[in-house]
Amino acid sequence: MTYTRRRVTNAFFARLNKCYSDEELVELAAVIALENFRSKFNPTFGVESGESCSLSWVQAEASRAADRFD
Image 1 (cartoon, rainbow, N blue to C red):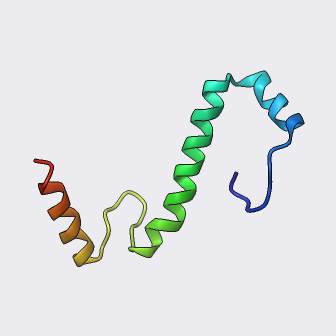
Image 2 (image 1 turned 180 degrees about the horizontal axis):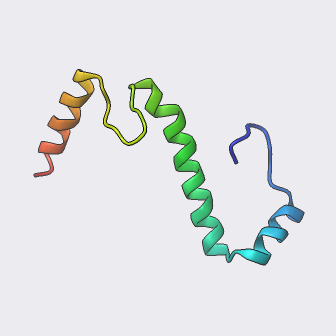
């Protein structure tokens, strides 16, 4: 999933189905997709592993957005 222009073949999917249910494969794909998103999105705003964004204007906007849900 992490490589552009690569597709899962039916044979590979059949091998995965021997170990994982359809529901587990969907969950696995969602987690991989989320991590791929984070690996591209977080560096844009200086977010390090286990930390919040270090850019003050992003912190302020995130705080304002969170206040709307209180």
